[in-house]
Amino acid sequence: MPIDAATALAAPPRTEEISWTRKDVQLYHLGIGAGVPATDVRELRYTLESRLQVLPSFATVAGARPPGVIRALSVPGVDVDLARVLHGGQTLTVHRPLPVQGTATTTSRVTAVYDKGTAAVLHLRTEAADADGPLWTDEAQVFVRGEGGWGGDRGPSVRAAAPAGEPALTVDRPVREDQALLYRLSGDDNPLHADPEFARRAGFDRPVLHGLCTYGLTLKTVVDHLLAGEATRVRGCAARFAGVAYPGETLRIRLWPEEPGRPDRPDRPEQPDGTAARAGAPQGGGTVRATVTALERDEAPVLADTVVEYV
Image 1 (cartoon, rainbow, N blue to C red):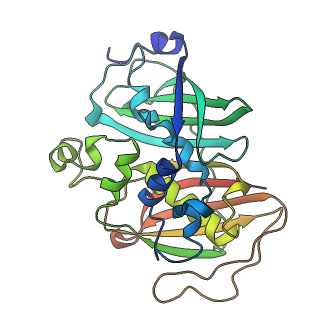
Image 2: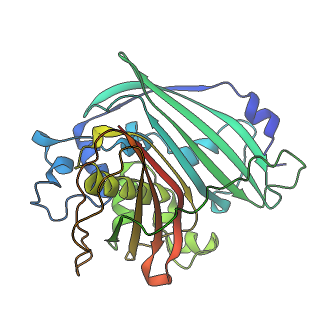
Image 3: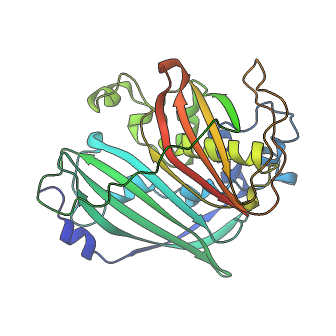
């Protein structure tokens, strides 16, 4: 059997030293669509070194190590075809704001292997810490199609209820044709996101956008429109990758702030060019629910069960 759950779960944690510079942070921000318009003072927080802050989702690529999807496939007991692999979801907890440059130690291990019948699901948890203590914890859920059916634990199947009522804010975000090519320079060079032939072998018409690119783009939208651009207020972000996005599409992001600390609803409607009005910064902490759909494909789902926690 290509996946030996017992062996994968028994494998010792993998420890690595990683480091990053401001240029890595800037490249990541460009990879998720920051810097448009290039001279917008709000975008300079992501692109200009003298004003630079770090969007917490940078943690998913920090150190340019192989991303969670690929690392989960390199543990003992796992030997599968990359073309059958999909990123199912991502959960990130930020213990304190990420520095613009730094060095950290990461510890990764497979924490669960589930049998979904037609697929296996691996959970890979990574914890990062520097000399001052814990920085972040993230968990990637990785689907391997065709590798289930061995009679193992099916795992949890409860999904969050859809957000109630109308969203407080709707933002349309165009995705550049070369977005996946730019994003993969931050470390995820899976050919699914660049090679048309590989994408067809994986069952797609053309290369797809990285799920973590959409994840970071969505988190940036929450920070920019509901948290007054203050990335350091984010404490966590979880999302399920409900479908794929393609470079060149428009992503429709709907946001539902929840109590406590719910921001006021925007005082002006979304603009004709797709730029939404910005809501005032909330006072106190809370959560934001989000959904992401692909506008040109009849709003096919892209991200679901998405929650951002902030202070």
